Length: 399
Ligand SMILES: *Cc1c(COP(=O)(O)O)cnc(C)c1O
Figure 1 (cartoon, helix red, strand yellow):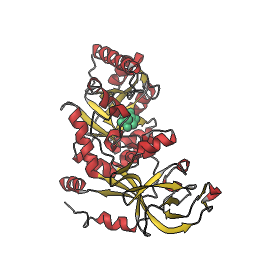
Figure 2 (tube, rainbow, N blue to C red; figure 1 turned 90 degrees about the vertical axis):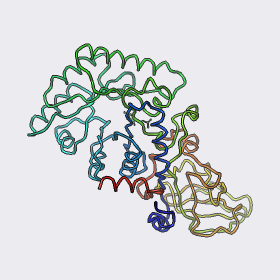
Figure 3 (cartoon, helix red, strand yellow; figure 1 turned 45 degrees about the vertical axis):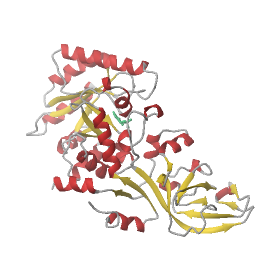
Figure 4 (cartoon, helix red, strand yellow; figure 1 turned 180 degrees about the horizontal axis):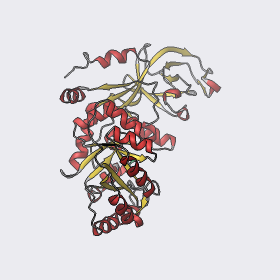
């Protein structure tokens, strides 16, 4: 195992103005927590769409597979190709819709597995596969709409849909699945209705003589709330990144946040009472103040709506952000941190000593959800992995 000081990522971090730190040990811990929650026969699909919720898809995928995930879930074909180009062999389900012949060819070429949502789409897939010589039947996953009103054939037409796909040449049904709309809610009415609809569809499809090899329904919230939703596989995103879909689920698992956002102090100065700070002078000092300029801004994904609303951590202390957050920089009131030097690391999101700023804190302040906060960090921020040993071992084992 590389110690902190020998880690090549540390050398890289020293160069950076701002970065996203990805704790691979926390990621592996979260995989272990989810696996302990589900029955041994239930597989884990790690959802790594949207660049693994902003954490970096390839690194995350390698790490979660090493930690015991069985499948990967992505939203788009390019997301799947990126993982295959990195040498990842695990089955990859594309959760989004794919419709054109060109897309079918890419899916077959890269050994990805599509979601089929409509009969029309199934016909395009079958016809395109017929034109590809020497192909084995393409595994396809049938998506039912049981109440999310997003992708999928209505549960009421599930049997006809399954029968059509079953009859079409060059396609092999690999799973039947649906997606929950309110799984984190304490009110179980909609979840129960969706599950009943899913069960009804399964029963009718089986009656028609078709047995889908796998059934799946649960996202993170479904996985954490009810074992009856686990079926053969759970599709988990948020919880793997160490966040809870709702506060009341904190007692179910011990999750550790994987991502931290850090930046460097680039200048420290003293300003007098009455001095305005940043664009619009939306903050005016009411006393002599020491302020720090930090090299991160809204172009890196720090929401400008948090101006004058957020805190940051520095030397284990919580300090207020002041004035408008600008494109590349923001200011902190560091009067309580005497002797602060340029180059000091500031934690915008994450932990420093016993102080924590979580994606939920930002989501609450912004009136959004932690999923959106995680996805908001831009590519200008390099993703730097710490506690790499697990991924290194994965890479060795696949060499
Ligand atoms: C994104 C997604 C998931 C994962 O959701 P989380 O709430 O992050 O666990 C599961 N299934 C489907 C179909 C999705 O689109």
